[in-house]
Image (tube, rainbow, N blue to C red):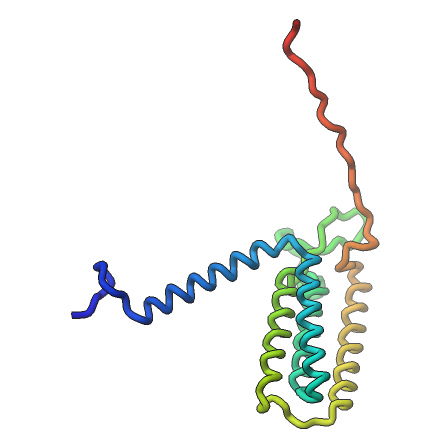
Length: 198
């Protein structure tokens, strides 16, 4: 007679696999959560993965279609990273929807990205890892004339960035914190007063 999950008998192989999968996912999520505040280290890890991928593609002399697809995906992620969460072109002036300040008298609202930095890092690192694994399968090594792909990607990148920069200029926002005025006010340490009298 099979165990239906109510008793203390042996569990089914699918339940065991499900538990292992959940435990591995929890451990992976825990590592991701611990890496969140370490921005520099995360991007150094990404640089190592990207260098490993570039070295693999250079040594194999192939997988240009994989690299082109990776480049298009990176361009898509970059647009999300540079764009505001609420697009000023499409938002209807509504009191409930926060928009970018348009005049100097408007209240300061911080720039909120459509794709936050952590998700950008995670997505781009995952994309490079998947592309790296794809370089081990000859089915993805499609013979193409790579200079055409490179030229098309450069044209696509320049047109997309020109449109994005003109959008930034039109709506007067800067998606980076360098060059912005900072208001770091150092507080005086609280005075320690003694309430006891001798």
